[in-house]
Amino acid sequence: MNRLKTQLAKIKMKNPVTVASGTFGIEFAELFDLTCLGVVVTKTITLEPKAGNHPPRLYETPSGLLNSIGLQNPGVEIFIKESLPDYRKILEDNPDNPTPLVVSFSGATIREFINVLQRLEEVSGIAGYEVNVSCPNVEKEGLSFGVDSEAVYRLTKELKENLKTDRELIIKLTPNVTDIVEIAQAAEEGGCDSLALINTLIGMAIDWQTGNPFIKRGFGGLSGPAIKPVAVYNVFKVSQNTQLPILAMGGIATWQDALEFFYAGANAVAIGTGNFINPLSTLEIIDRLAEFLESKQLDLQSIIGKTGKLLNQ
Image 1 (cartoon, rainbow, N blue to C red):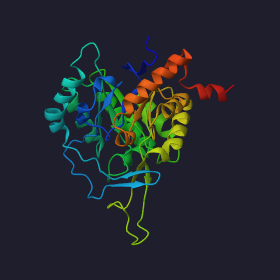
Image 2: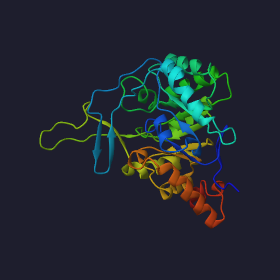
Image 3: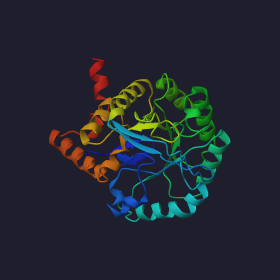
Image 4: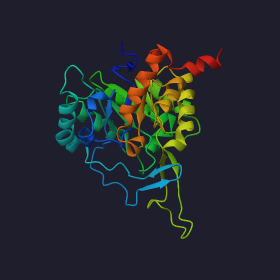
């Protein structure tokens, strides 16, 4: 009996653990069998190649990791030509145990988002899209959409209308807003299938001896254990106010961390900064979750949203 199986709207997952976009690449296949994951999510791609921000782009604080990569990527055409075949070969190699691939993408305008979507719709081997409207590290894209509920609604609606396949449309939200529920409801109204939350929190670290910021751009996105309570709260709030499945992320490093998110209402979880600390953390979380559920004679579905039910009694 598989007690770990779950679902993100259309995507059926053999277990609820995946990786956060930008923290994981095809090179992890040298360490373990990627088909052990519930889903694989790619790094965010854009219509044209992006060099990203100037270094230094990473700084480790005592409580988490600051990054300002700036969506560095080769562009959608190189992704389709060079990266997608490698993902397909690895993830589809074992037909008895395939793992869905979710492609993350972003854009500076609604037209750019649509152009990337339409190009990806022409190729096979993709189960869904994670639409990144939440990156704090690029100018005039990503986050500029994610903080405006009307913009999120219009973008989601346009993408849905241009979706010619039955692939999943996941909108990734930022916590850097006054009310994430309003943004989530706009995405739901626009027609998305599920939500991913949260992206990083905007942060800054300064060298006390010189006054210089440690990140070249001045500020970046904070990830890691420090943001977990914020992420759990946002998942809980959104799960209580929408009907959409949730792919949750934000400071998850252990199976106990993952459990908190399921209790809060997440249907699946993604490991981000935890991959840098322990590249095998995803596998360990899958194994420990399975052991926990077996010891309690529970399945995952029975504990999703448990905290909300307890509070509403």
